[in-house]
Image (cartoon, rainbow, N blue to C red; front, top):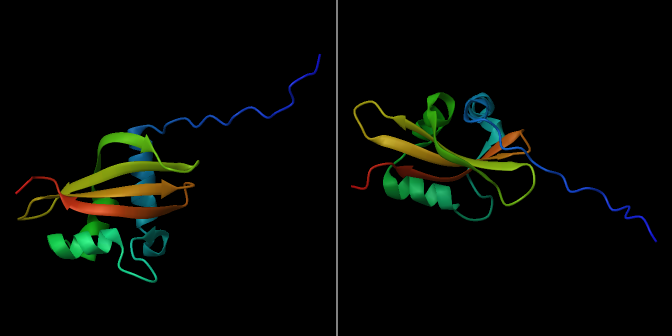
Length: 118
C-alpha cells in the first residue's frame, strides 16, 4: 500500500466585494499598475473606449472612485479575480469597467462600456 504524496490543490477564497473594491481603488491610484493598452496592436479595451467615446480619464475615475457592481468571478489563471467597477459620470450615463485583479498587484482592464443599452 502506497501513500499519496501529491500536494493538496490550492483553494482560492473569493474576496469580499468591499475588500476587492478597495483593492481596485488602491491599485488604480498608480496608473503604472493599470494595463489596458497592447504593445503590438490595439487592445479590446482601447477599441471599445474609442468606439463608445469613453476616455482614459473616465476609465481611471471609475476605477479610483466607482463601486463594485455584480458578481466577483475567478479569472482564467490562479490569483486572478474579475469584477466590474461602475460610476455615474457627471452629466452623462453610468460607465462600467470590467477589470481583472492580477495576483493582487496590478489591474488588467478587459473592457469598458456604458451600463445602459442606448
